[in-house]
Amino acid sequence: MHTSIIHQIRAWSTCAEPGIPIDEGGRAIRVLDLFCGGGGSSFGARAAGAEIACGVDAWNTALSNYSSNFPNAVAKNQRLEEICPSQLRDEIGDVDILLTSPECTNHTCAKGSAPRSEESRATALETLRYASTFEPEWIILENVVHMRPWSRYGELKDELRRLGYYVLEQTLDASLFGVAQRRRRLFLICCKSGLPQMDFHFRRKKRIVSDILDERGSWKTSALNSNNRSRATLERAERAFAELGYDEPFLIVYYGSDGSGGWQPLNRPLRTITTVDRFALVERVDGEHRMRMLQVPELSRAMGFTSKYKFTDGTRRDKVKILGNGVCPPVMKEIVKAALAQNSSPSDLAPQHDLVRENDLMTTE
Image 1 (cartoon, rainbow, N blue to C red):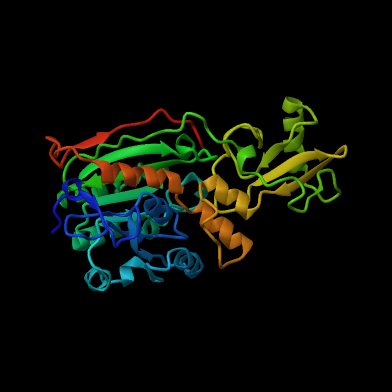
Image 2 (cartoon, rainbow, N blue to C red):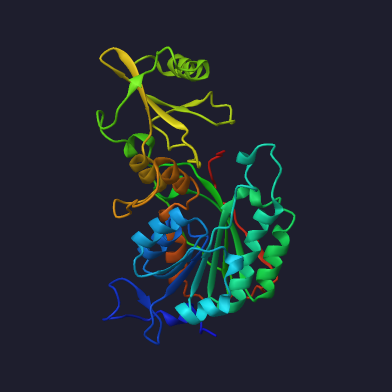
């Protein structure tokens, strides 16, 4: 359907939004975002110069925030299996990039020992149905690294290749992209014209927790040593005191199982943000240790969102969940930039071959 984007991007439209690449027919490079959530992937793709055509998500609160931040995009509050892709294509037109972040809870270790839902995991296969109809030049699928052991993961990649895509599998840590968070995620980067050549520009200096914190006094705090404080919280704090002393601020970290002792210093990237509150800042103020949970603006910065992203709907718990389910925009920005900049001729590798290239990444939960 499309001629290769690799050979299309030649000029800049005088009538399009500044910075948006166009094809040789004068059309902006357009994106469809499946499982879009609050819009982390779209936010990054837009920053890379793409036009966001449509976002689809079943959670109305997330989609409400998505719609507010992408007012020119069509926003579909439906499950993907309830939508006819051909009808959606008639509504929004052609797209060049398909972004997709299938449900991940039933892949991740955060599920614990609870039974996995195969129906939830199989939502990843919806990507194939939309890819078959829209035939985008690029597909970028994001998920937790725990997706790899899924019994149908190989089938998913095989079907992508049968649709004519070259598949590049990468595990990327957001902290290497200037994000103040260790967030390790799996990306399947697929291209019709040849094996994707991803030349990422990593930040030499990593951002850390102290970079994303609001000024002292911005939020209400409570005494660490209070009658209703749990023993487990105090034990976490004692382990931090033993390492740092009593004057250094630190974070108490809940819901962790990596042997860190339930705390972390502020001079490292934040541990992985999840869908529940898990970070409490402890500081010594006037000789007393005070604590508070990290707030939504701080967590948003730790995901890599700029101040241009606005939450317009939902409770605090909803917003934390949206962030925990999200994709770090700077990571997606670099992937889309690399895709749009690819100008090599198609690879000699046939679509049935995979390239798996692992970057030197931190170990995260």
